[in-house]
Structure formats: structure tokens, C-alpha cells
Length: 511
View 1 (spheres, rainbow, N blue to C red):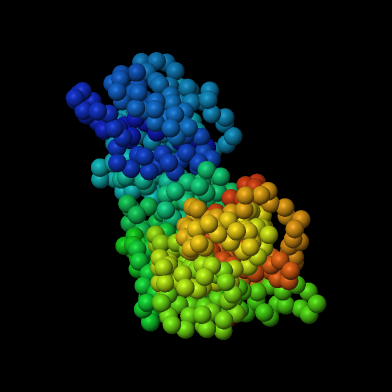
View 2: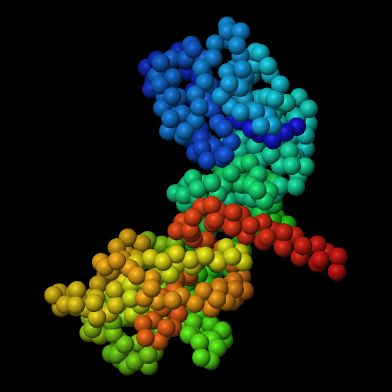
């Protein structure tokens, strides 16, 4: 049995069956939109089929849906000698494998006229039949080329199984969980295909509509963006960071189920990402970069910093001086991500203006580094390191001149939306980045944080040439790097992590 080379969704699994009720507007069934979004970037040809007798409102909806999700739309007649499989064969190239025809249980009798070889049928909502979403059931159903699922969302898991089976089980299924907008950003760049990648990875979107544990039992690894699922972070608590974070019920359920699956590789373990949530902890960790510096070469370092629990301290000026912080300063919430105001920041020009700040507390006051408006965004994908150059905040003198008219009041901004940047064209010749030095820092961060995929921002200080790491983040989008370079590197990083984990488990079992 080959892998899946095409997916044909009958109208019966997308639309309700109330054919006689013309008073109701046509609408997609629950779960249909979810599955279509995943199939759109699956790298598997996908189409919608319907008969000539379909009511006009439904036909228009299907055509509109096909256009929205870049799907093919096939119309067939039950009385025609030419079956739907023949129509599809003219459109989709036969490069090996089978097409699957997905129909509802009440359309189970729908069969292929003409050539039906190379086709499998998937029946959704098929009464008392056992769902064909585990290895044993798929093997049994595969003998007849007829599979059963209870919900349309299970189709994605079935496709992953069939594609893995076609590789003699050499491929690895990797489940992923993140917010829809982030998932779509990765998927439309080809990062999450349902068919095997060049290095043998198959990506399965984990669905919270379905029980999580059975899905985890069928995957080799899970990649997540847990920071997408944060409800609250209480940095005022004296507890460990892992106890300061409140995740959504969905994420808590995923964590609980992962703990039950000891053989499931998690990229990356939840405890490993907690330091990235805390700007103070990251600053403290970055102090360790000092060990990488060599006499006579430019340094890589953390910025000078100070944690504050109040902006109205009588000895604040003294504390800033002790922390080697000269004005202006950049002030950031201690919570680095996951909550609405984590990116609410300010640049402060005068000490007596601290009392007017609206930056959430506790906060981290950070050194303002003059860097000729050049920011280097570095991405570590496994052992590979990439970077892009971006326009950044102007030097202090330029910034102070720009805001002198308002009395140099604190400049509040959201770093995700309204970061103040230099107006002049950036010139990367102003600085020469020491790529070897920063790569050694990336390796050090990888070992220290035990993260597989992460990003960090570097500025090169005017005058000293110090390379200063001003921010670290987990599982960035790395969209500044060309897709044909970044996506294969992304896949390689994931594969290497899974293989390494399996080797370690085997060594532990045999030792």
C-alpha cells in the first residue's frame, strides 16, 4: 500500500445533510474548516467533489471554499460513464501512492466508476465501526482499502499513518501544537507537510477536539510553543518560575498526557523554556558569556541591568549607578512573553521621569547600547546558525534630539508593533559582526538552556565593538531567513533531536 498522493473530500463530509431544507443557509460542518486549513499547505493535492444535483447555495459555498483554500473542485454525475476517479486522474499527476476519497457514512455506497485502482475510501461517522487511526486498525482496513473514522479531524492522523507505512515505518511522525496564526505562518512556508520531508519527517497537527493521549501514542515527538498558551504569569510570587505560570487547560492536558508517554520526545521540555519567560533570569544566565571572551578580541556579553519592583525608589539613581547604568535606559517587563503587556516598554531619559512609567512591574532596567541602528537577529536551528540584519533604535544622542521637544518624557512603545527605528538607511558596513564569536555564543546558549530552536538579538556597541545580546526567545519564526535555507535546517534540527533522544534511551536501556 502506497502513501497518500491525493485527497478528495466529498461534499457530504463538509456540508450538512438537510438537502430538503432550502430555508437554511449553506454552511460548513464543524471541523471542516479546521481540516481544510491543515490540508491547504499539506503538500498533498486536495480537492472537493459534489454531484450535479447539489442545491445551488451549497454548490456556491463549496466553490467559494475551494477557492479560499486553494483546492480543486470536481463535479460528477452518477449517470455518467466517466467516474470521479477518471475525472481526478486528468487533473492530478500519478506519481505513486493512492488517492483517498473521504465520504460520509450516509454516502457510504458512493463508488468509483471507471478505474478505481489506486483509490482508498475513508468513511466518516460510520456507525459502529472501529476508527482506523491506530496501526493495528489501519493494517486490517488496508486489506480492503476502506477506512473508518468517527470525526473528520481524525483524517489527518490517518493520512500520517498511511504515509509512514509507505516508508516501511522509517519516517517519524512529529506532532505540533501552537496558536493558529503561528501554525499558519510556518505551514504556508512549507514547514509542516503531511507527506514525508526530504529527511523523513511527517507533521501532525495535534487537535484538542480529539483526545490528546491517543494522538501522542502515534507520534514520535512533539514540538510546541507553550508560550502561546499562557493565561497569566505572576512574577511577584517567590515560587519557582514553573509555578508562576498559568497555562490554558489545553496545554495542561498536553503536559499531563506527555508525562504518561515516557518515550515521546518533547521539543523542547517545558522546564527548559521557563528561563526564556523571565527577562531577569535570562540576563543572569547571559553573564556567563564572559567565559567565551579572549584577550585582544571583541567581547560578547550581556547588557548591564537592574531589577526593580517599584519606580518610586528614593535611592533609584544610586542603584542605577551601582549597576553601571547611565541614561538613557530601556525598561522592560520582567515577563518576556505570553501575556498581553510583556512587550510594553519604555526608554527613559531622566531619573525623575521613572515615577511616570507605565511599564508593568516587576521590571528590568537595561543598558541602552549605542549600535548605529543595526540589529542582528540570530537563529539557532540545531547546530546551524543564521542571521539577518534589521533597522533598529537610533543612538542615544539622535534619539534625545528627536524627543527634545516633548521635554524628553519617557518614550513608551510596544516592541512588537511600534519600536522606534532610525529613519536613515541602515549601513551594515558600520559594524563587522564577528560570526565566529556569536556562533560560539549560540553553542553555549544551546548547551546552557538545552533548547533545540531559539533566537537571540545582538547589537555591536559603537566604540568598544562589544557584541551585546539584548534578547533571547524560544522557537522564533526565523522568517527573515530564506525558506529554501531555513526550512530544511529546521527539519534537520528536529530530526537530529529525535534521533539523539532515541539513541540516549537505547544506551540507557542497554547499560
